[in-house]
Amino acid sequence: MNPVPPSAERILVVDDEPEIVALVAYHLGKAGYRLATASTGQDALEAARRERYSLIVLDLMLPGISGFDVLEALRGDESTRDVAVLMLTARREEPDRIRGLSLGADDYLTKPFSPAELVLRVGAILRRAGNTPPVSADSIVIGPLRIDRAAMTVLVEDRPIELTPTEFKLLMTLAERRGRVQGRGHLLETVWDAAPDIQTRTVDMHVQRLRTKLGAAGDLIETVRGFGYRLRGPSPRGA
Image 1 (cartoon, rainbow, N blue to C red):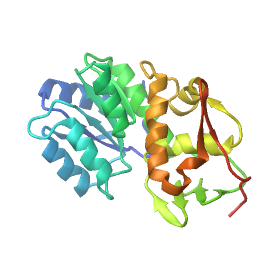
Image 2: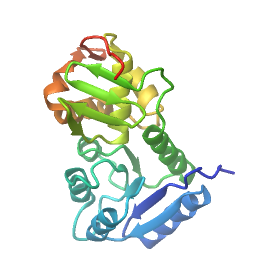
Image 3: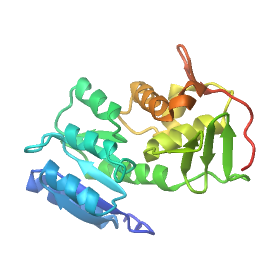
Image 4: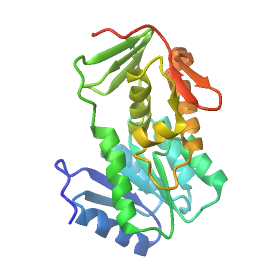
């Protein structure tokens, strides 16, 4: 039996196939999550703007507005840009996976899928969203970049930066090991819990998005060719 999440996180399931919605809702509900559903992209966007969700399980092939368009709209809206998104779709082609991850999806699961794996992946995403490592200082400051662990906020030159849970975990991993090269395999294990089907290109896509969001501080993330990434800069100090 799966333990009930202590905060009973609310999840929005978006799919136009009633059987899939029922299957996902049943297993996530059994795991203790609170569920809402939507069958179109427009309904999903309206629901996400009306109520705050911890995670959205999003199909790609939706009537009207595609899942890609929904994801792009979510990431472009200040009120929804930080919600975690798990893409759940029958589209298995690599370009579709790459596009979904580059638009900001936190994970990508293809149909047919194992309900047990779905629950595990949802749990892994939410752990990344809700857990911060035990540390002595609340803030890390590296040049123009300030990371507040306790509040899970990021500032660049005192300007707030909205990150997804996965992007925040990735940045924290690099910041806590600043100056040391982090291999793609290590980042996959640390940030993505070594989830099945997650490839090293996932790391590259998220680093690219993270650099873009960080703007002036994006150059702090250095690429170490053939191995991984490193966050450079002066030593952090407590806020």
